[in-house]
Length: 89
Image 1 (cartoon, helix red, strand yellow):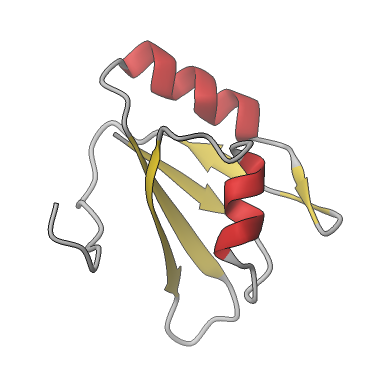
Image 2 (cartoon, helix red, strand yellow):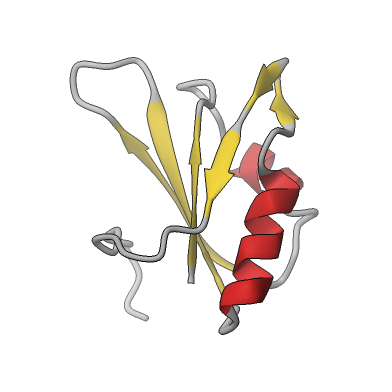
């Protein structure tokens, strides 16, 4: 399942994203996607979680936390187009 993170600095690193998740081994992939014509990015985090309740709880935990002084927004979308990752899983 996926968590979407918005309102992050455009130069955010994967290490900063992993720190939000306390470097959990449940994090399978992190994709940082630039938005054309905009200075912001969207983060997709794929987690090894099968429960809707658990993924919502993780998103709630992340939502409103701060990255470099900016409150981020996180959600676990129910319906979305799956982001493309560069690995083969």
